[in-house]
Length: 401
Image 1: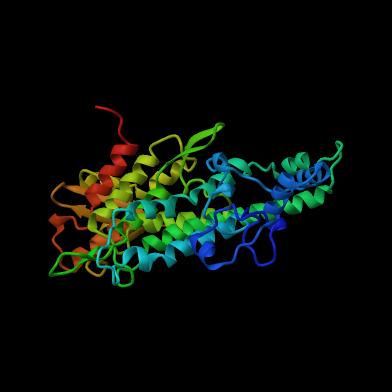
Image 2: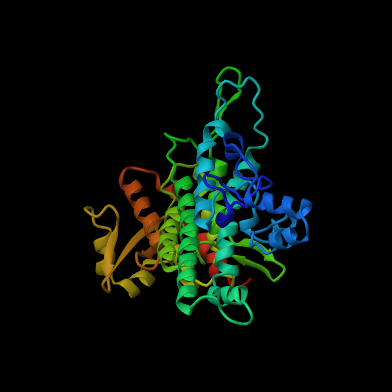
C-alpha cells in the first residue's frame, strides 16, 4: 500500500490501514479508510455489480507471503519509489541513534537487541539493489510494461512513453543504490568525536552509557565489500558484491572511491579492523564471482628477496632517489608512473607498489615510510605491510604446496 500512490488519499502515506508503514508514521498520523479498504469493504458488503466494479480497479497488492519476493512488499517501510524507501530507511537509522545507542535516563537498559536492530537497518535495504540487478536491470522494463498494459492484444501507450517510464525507473533505482553505497561510506567514516566506535561504560558501576558503532562499521564493511548470498526468488540464487555490481556508471565511480577508502582504513576504528577488511577483499577477489578481475591488484605489492632483483627491473638510480634523505615517503617515478619503495630488514624484503595499479598498497607503503621517518620502530610493522602482503599472496598468487 505504501507504494500505491495512485490510490492514496491526500496527505496519506498508504492506500490501506492494513499496510504496516514506519512506526512513527503509524503513531503520529490519523489513519482513515484508504482506497483499498473501501474497495475491500465494497466487495464484502456490496452487490454483484459493486463487486465487479471493485475488482476492476488496479490496486497494488501484497500479502505476507509476498514479503520475501519483492522489496516493494516490505512491511514498516515508508516511501513510494525505491529511492524514497531507501532514503527513509537511512533517516530512520540515523534518527534512532539517540534511542538505540545512548542510555539517557533509563535505569534498566537492555542492549541485547542492538546487533539485530543494526543488522536489519543496514542489510534489509540491500533488496532494492537486488531489485535493480535481478528484476529490472536487464533492460526489459519496456517490454514488461507493454505485456501488463495490453488490452485486446494492443499496446495502450506509445513506445516513447514506455521508454520514458523505464528511464524514470532506472534513474530512481540507480539513485537508491547510490544512496546505499554512500550510507555505508558515511558509517565507516563516522568520526569517533561524534559517534564513538568504542562502547562507553560508567567508570564506577560499569554500566553501559553509550553503545559504540563498531558493529555498525563491521556490517557496513561486510555489506559493501563481501559477497552477498542472494536468494531473491526461486529463479535467482547467486552471490554478488555491491562494489563489483553497483548498477550504473555513476555508482561505479562512487563504489571505487568508497572501496579504496574502506581498504585504506583512514577512519576511526580499532587497529584490527582494517586487516579484517583487507582479508574480506582478498578472499572475494580470489573467486570467479566478481566481474572486476583486476580489482585484486588494488592491494598488490611486488616483493623482491634481494636488491639485485629489484634494481634489475627499476634500476639503481630510481631506488637511490627513493631512499635519499629529502624523500621521506620514498616515492619515485619509473616509466612515467608513480611508485613507492620500502625495505623490511627483518625479512630482507624489498617492496614496491605502483600508484595507478595498487592505490591501496601505495598508500600503506607511503604511510609506513612516513612513520619510520618520524621515528617509529620498523620491527613493529605499524601499518601491517606483512599482513597486506600475506593476504594478497595467499589468496591471489597461491599455487599449492
